[in-house]
Image (cartoon, rainbow, N blue to C red):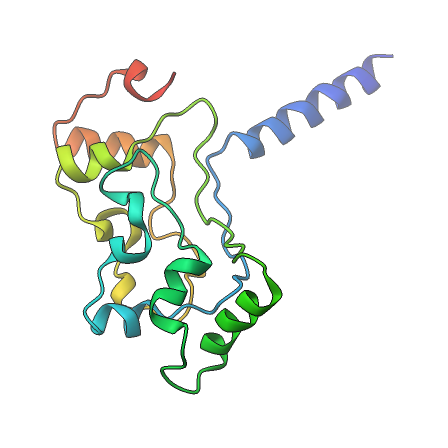
Length: 165
């Protein structure tokens, strides 16, 4: 009776440790192999596509309409650009797969970090202007240690209740 019970507790703690370790997904295939470098070097900014990053608690991922603003008609012969119009013809939305997932018990506000703290997108997301394909991994994993390190370094509040609600 003791061995199955101990094995059960061991499995519970192992799985719980993996679940709460702060690990983030490394890679997700995206509907479009978006080239950040090409778009940013053409004069676009992060918030042209990620509209809510400066003004909302959550940054948004671009909708098909956002892409069609520039790509309704072909700008080149890119297969990825052709996919955008194929999604429109099929009447389906782009289903981006977010790389980051903030745990349900944590509150994170893009607006607060961008407007109040003055952080740039690159602070947390890295040099996206160099990426010619969707990111394969997170630049900075969303762990409590990483958040606290930044808050302590910049002398921002570290009160648990500010983020854990």
